[in-house]
Image (tube, rainbow, N blue to C red; front, side):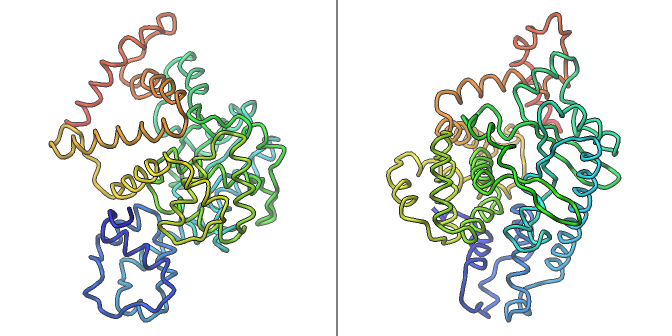
Length: 394
């Protein structure tokens, strides 16, 4: 499966996993521009540069553009940590409980330095009852919704029931925040995990603040579910799993898998572990190896993830722009829904259909009065076709 990846991606994986001295034959290296693009797409610029810097390899291949990207990424992470601390202070003043998801604190825990793990946004989890207050605090800080998510009270209520976060952006700081009120959408059966999030959260101490984070086991499961539902299309999500396995140890992974079994998300954990093994050569405990071997459907999920990893760096084209783009779009749709079905079973069909008809993209084009809300479901297919052609014209 790894052989299906493009040259640049395979080169990155080989570099990050190699324990031997680097070769000195520059002709064997991929194109620098392509390499930087792939590193940026998978958010691996920092870890790649840190791996090759101050080695014989760096004098041959670490070009100024790569160093520039590394420096920019490090500075961006410093800004993100400062902004997280600012938000935490304001939330605490309003007595809003908050859990920091992924982001800088994950870098602090498993990369030894929060600036060593790249992220494009801050993920913050609040309790559903605190959602409106937290949202208002972020608005007062200068954040706005990246896109209009609703036009009417009914749409807003339905959005909150169907989805799990708002995406906000602050133009002054150039920072994005995802404000969550639950970890998962309804795609995955994980109610057992949702109920244990807050009682098991732990305090992380940084910059004089006590910032709550998920417990180690729930965090690992969350990262696996998040990666699986996004088809692991960014390699740094797999690298997170690698770092956790290496730091927490094999007994921890087995215990986390047993918790995942109780919440019916065990296949997400198995896929994350298998990709960590295939791509980054991580050793897995025997119970996990046995579970992977026994799951006959897991190879289909892994194949899907390899496909999405390989297509992450491709330009986004309308399916109407060319026959090749149309075929790729169809394949993405088929693979995506196959993966979601393998993860969530028959419930995935209901969720997929529901999200087709409940779509903020449609509401931004044409919004029906709440008294006639049922008409939204009638015109949804027409608005889907309109969106397709509008993207093509753009």
